[in-house]
Length: 552
Ligand SMILES: Cc1cc2nc3c(=O)[nH]c(=O)nc-3n(C[C@H](O)[C@H](O)[C@H](O)COP(=O)(O)OP(=O)(O)OC[C@H]3O[C@@H](n4cnc5c(N)ncnc54)[C@H](O)[C@@H]3O)c2cc1C
Image (cartoon, rainbow, N blue to C red; front, side):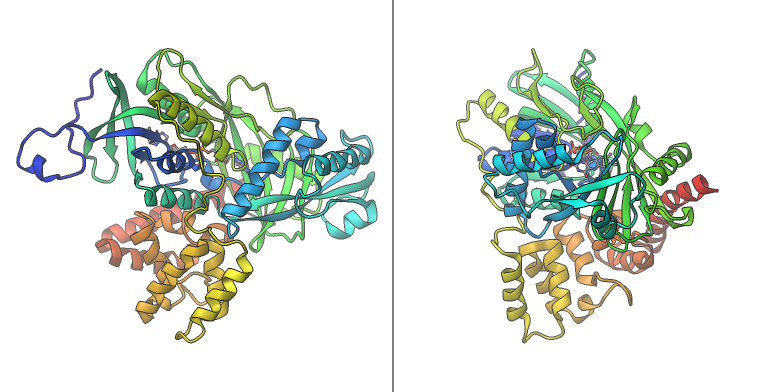
């Protein structure tokens, strides 16, 4: 059906106000979905000189990416399981990510215990190490080790000693703030000229002679508009099929959906522990808690991935206590649980007990210029986005190779984080009240862009204040989130911009202060501020209630 919207984009343009007809604005490429895959595709295409529009119906990274555990796989597990192609890809990708955004992607020690009668043997792990060394020419990250049972328990006291034969210790990588990785991609795309709009939903897509016409709803104002693009990338993650059906009712289902659950536990771990099997059971140390999970259950719609279920949690708890007994010593240590839908390409069989790591960029048969990016994760998203933009460029007759493997992200662009931080500390030494830990904190979150936050702080004493007595974040960061990072709601800031995103209270303690700063910046009246606050408290309350209900 033909969209009935008026071409009012950009909003309130002077010609529209005069009442003269305005043709829909047109782009080379429209990307649907502002998770890690869509943001990476927009950046890649903008770097190749295409006119790009990136549309996200919620906040950036408010889909699956925002709740990911943040593991960037080193590829060792794939080497061990003889999946050479995947191992090589992971190896190249973590190196690239670590180089382009060293402040966001760092090594994480992981211990895999081996038990008598289990599916893994120490011999197989040793073989995997050798093979991984060979694949990486000996440069595959920090050294790997085989540990005796006693040493394994010393490193990870949460393990059960019964039947323990030893463990493999290796390094994966992790991104503590997956949402910030998305924001950096969006910023980089904008710096290359891309038009990036969060809270804009694509409600229908129609083929026209020169490409596609998209109907877009601004979810903040409920205004509708039309845009044209010569090509479309569908990067809507678990909603890929929903977006596809907005183009054609004959859409072939492209993805299978799995519900993943994370549980936050008040516990201590020095290294991440990964117990193999299906589903895998793991614990990853984070800020003052351990992130544990996960249960991967097949679901039929993305909505089924929303909200933890008490039944799942009870089952997971039993499994976790059997496999890593010290992980949840007592159910009262469970802090909260969150869930999300994970989309994997439909051709993929049931995951074998490892990680769903298949991905594909497909140009739909018979719909040239419509490219679907399915199955991207935090390790391989850059490559998937590159494949997708290659397909778009081919269709548009553009002959420019991707450069995302060598162009630093917005906050990257320094070789060594320690040297960069030292330089920044030196520059700020004579400036009023910017202590070193503050510089450290900001560099860890924003990389090179920490300078912009510092600049804000220097302009106004009030912005240098902390959000609360125990808070790590400052008022300037909230202002920066609104002015430079398109934050519109309280949860945008607390769950996707600040370090509160990984604090056990998820920012409840500073929510009041943040809401006041946002109210000032965005002109909220008191009822709106209260509404934002209540909505946020209810959202986090539901995550906490789910675990309380499960252990009752
Ligand atoms: C619990 C859990 C833990 C995980 N942990 C890890 C991990 O540690 N490491 C790892 O590599 N992977 C992990 N994953 C998988 C990984 O998070 C996802 O594969 C990846 O984030 C998917 O990114 P995406 O951009 O494709 O999808 P999403 O992040 O879901 O982005 C899609 C976006 O499209 C938007 N959208 C949908 N419809 C429309 C529309 N009509 N108009 C505009 N926008 C629209 C949505 O709002 C959404 O933001 C995990 C997954 C789960 C569920």
